[in-house]
Length: 258
Image (tube, rainbow, N blue to C red):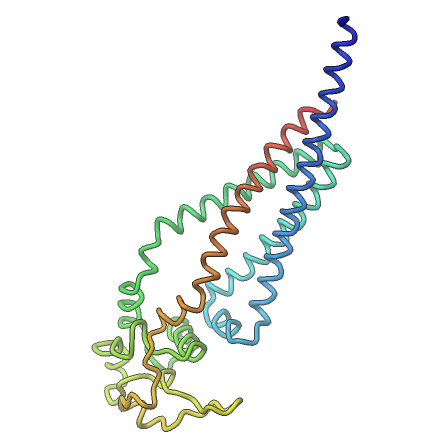
């Protein structure tokens, strides 16, 4: 085998390898494109959701901001996937470098968010929420963000307190409303569709267990979101992995383009 033939075969192998990387990058960027579409869909769903999330989100500026962050991230991934696909198919070095820098920034931001979530995970315990509820919940002052958020949660999930109605003992709420055992948000509502009246509210406020919700909100919310939490965690790992491979393929393709 001559030197020219070996060189030609090596060049052909390089072209085949480059072509393989190009189509692999296209696949990974298409997955990123789908992920961005999913995040956009989730953000829009939360904002227009009919089951009560809209009320909770609107009552808490932090959550309200979070929804728009999800929408922004979804839009960015949507655009990023599109740019990556175009850069891979057209073998455009400028698009590939722009794609690499953007996805690196997003990857590092997501990694930082995951680390912060792990560090501050102790703030998601029953004890933390119970302490905060006792200190800050006022009962009827919906202009207070904390109180308005808790009222929305208790109304939405038909629950009372963090663990149970007992959480309101020795709390700020009892200091402000000494004649009431629980707030009106803990009272059961009419069973008829559209009937939001409390029945009978006086008995509920005095502590009658028959007319109040006795399940704690921590259990109610965790039970409701348990599946979604695991799915979200799995999706986050998958997205980070896809982004990492996309960056590797982008740099390999960038270096391989003449």
